Image (tube, rainbow, N blue to C red; front, top):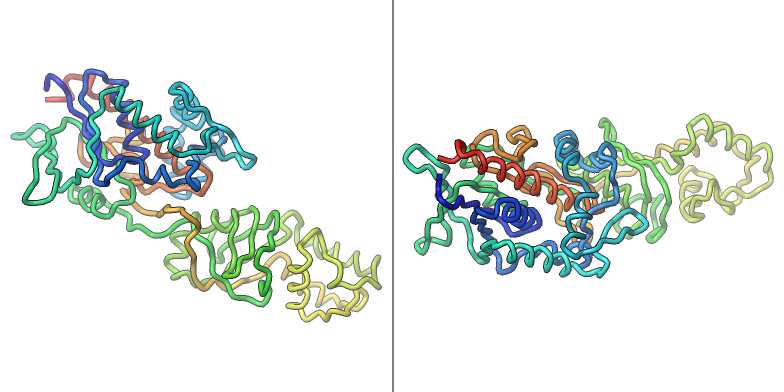
Length: 421
């Protein structure tokens, strides 16, 4: 065993820095080095959440928490039982950073400044003695062998490269294609990256000139799939956005990619009513309000302009009264309210989100330790894995959790002298 075990963490983002701090604090006799190819650490943290950093989400029930992860839902159950949002809040509070909860459950530092999180992590790393090396790219990586019992990491760019040795390597490189290639060279399988968290491009007369109109609660689904989401909907000048669409794009990322983002979107504008209840209610209006103009008065608190677009799409003239509708027309209206089929013609980037679906296959990892099942003494954490979540702080939480689990396992591994030659 080396006198001072060396842990090298590749990647100076959220997962890498969180793992570094915890490794150094849990194993003070170890040397911990972070390699970051960029000029600055935690660049994504800096610009996340509009510069405020959505640290986590106030969802403390693990069974509910995992429902926000289209990929990784099953695998994250055990890790979240050991380190979940409540633990994240406590971890930062112990280091002087308080978080606040907003109405939708998102949690930010009380300063509303992502620099607070950066300063906390960098400061904690420096106090714990972590060696922080920026502008240091990993050129090649060689696992331990019988003749070389340590990891050999070639850093820098040829021909000016140097070799760094390590007992343990943790890859926390995010959605980096070059890093995925290096990990694949070690024997891992990489799911190709595809977009997640995006809005939908839709051109349809039912949405014409409705940009800015929102509906509080709708249900969206993709045909021939089990993908179904609920939430608020926002009409934009290019199509649809809002929480329901973003959630759908995450859970339907692979299907939509296969369809080249050209398929149908089924919209239920009134998910709180069953089809039977809706049809009966429309019949009741025809009976009790026969002389009331249909288009002039909205239904079930739907935005008036949206209601008028749907009514017109059903071929109902502006002057039509409820008494004038046949059962066939009522049925057509009912279908459009709960089963509108809108044509998706593409996707659009959502604000500053960078979430992609792709990474190291989860079956190749032990989620009790975050250690590779393919290569011993290789650990992985954060977005380098085939894990992604909906917007709201969930992606950061996966980074904190997987990094913490890895740090705990590394410390236990190093405490067992038989694991290090």
